[in-house]
Image (cartoon, rainbow, N blue to C red; front, side):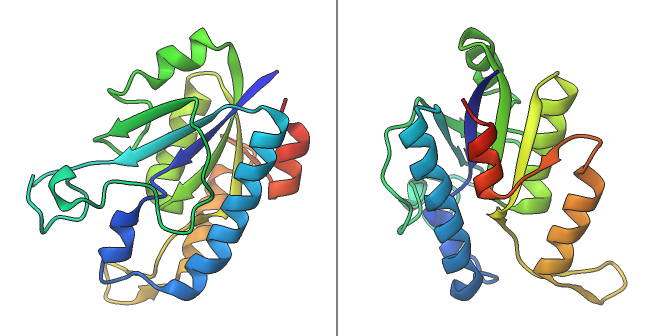
Length: 185
């Protein structure tokens, strides 16, 4: 089965959010760079997906006007098979990505990027619902602590564990970087 890597929102914008923490980001970038290198080595197409939203103002790190809508510093350089700019959580909504995946006869996608429980999870669920096999590489996703509705805090590791729990076996196959690369062709 033909595989593609969906590299979601690994962009400079996040480094300009108040919740950004460099320590977990370094481990995340190591995993992502290993995944990207393995895909390049195997000829697996990589789709670079960036998130853009309003307001269109230089103070919004997710707007084109900010100059931050670009790959994250520290991300390994690669030539994407496709560049996508999305405006929704799922990379499959309004981007043309679904058409491209079908044209390329892709049957399996590897999901990696930011944020684990938002754009990565949403894209993984959507891809599964559309009939793709989905390999979710939790170590190559990143998220941040969040305040719960009752005023508590759910830590980033708790969010990742929750995300993997609700996805596993229903929507995705949980994989390490090595496992995803071994399954890719």
